[in-house]
Length: 140
Image 1 (cartoon, one colour):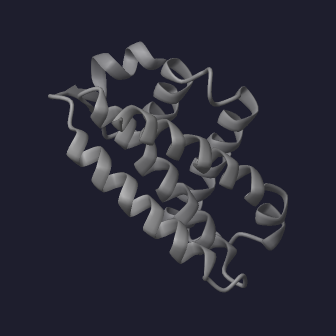
Image 2: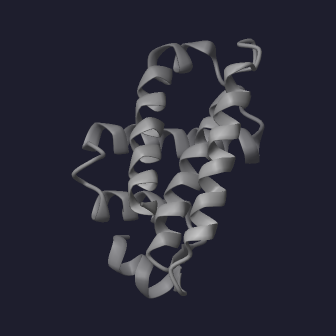
Image 3: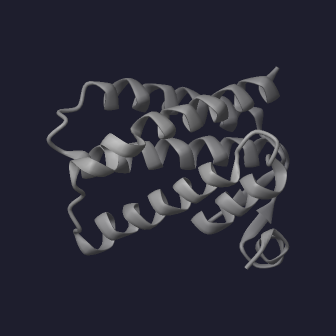
């Protein structure tokens, strides 16, 4: 599947919506504040919150272009296609891994070990920072 497949099958078009993007950005910032205070003994829950933040930031970018995706894979394909200058291939690979982990947690109850966050949390925060700046810039 590529971004064109998403446009044909899994993405709907609407009017660009700055208010939705602003609301999503605000919610992402609140979630980021909350995750900072979460007990470190629950790495699966922390990973889920990080994933949700990233998903909502990408959704905000789509809203600004008048698009809506119900496919998480298409969200990442959108990022690869439309914002390759901001997000690297290795960061996209990490986001894909985080998407799979989130599905394993949510649908199969898989517990996540602390080592995933130890290795990747700073990279995830960097990606969130990049997406936050990107959304904020497009809102101006």
